[in-house]
Length: 305
View 1 (cartoon, one colour):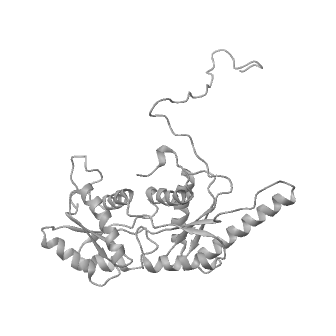
View 2 (cartoon, one colour; view 1 turned 135 degrees about the vertical axis):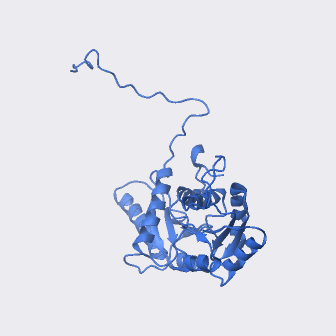
View 3 (cartoon, rainbow, N blue to C red; view 1 turned 135 degrees about the horizontal axis):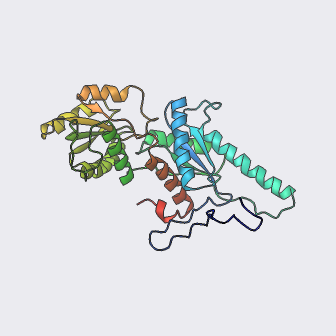
């Protein structure tokens, strides 16, 4: 029983945890600057509840790294109602900023007129896609507001890590190269599949080199949207001595046409891993693109290298 002066004798007293010092100290949390532009996650492909769930999870990861972040989701093939387009989300952000400014003035507060972009648009794409990026630039122009469009998420070592994890989840690679155990179904050759043309294949090839270093097996990039490319790459790997192949999508997921991955895996005669999806690194890379565009310094523990 406690008294007015404190806890009763014999009861534990909850003390504040001392701040950890030294090189292992946890970084101070950084919040989004007040009035910062809205992060608009631009999602390619046909909208669906599954796509929306994936995008919301990616946004949730970004918000966990930068509290106070304002974010919205724009669907490149959206219908403008249930699935708003990037242009609609940007225009809404502009209207909200203008309304806040007018309300502040009406309340008699001295506020500077808002400057700079109302939104930073980050494509939910692992690699380049000239057609989709062209459509996004058009969407930004159609919004009638000032918005900045960032580059795609890769190539990046964290995406190589994400592909490795998806392969291990499918039983096609060891989960940790440092552990001395084998996976009976582990592939000895990887076809790293992407969409978006030759530029996308070249970019995937950079991530492929990082993946090959992680797995110590050959990795060759191929175009899912180019007929025969995956099968030809699989034959190339077999010709160089690989026996058990795996198809690894270098794709987040929404940009992948339905049935294309399964058809390519069947043509190549190999098993396939799942797309990257809402792997934590995807959300962190989305935030990194946003932060870089605005010059926001992220906490040391969350900076990407």
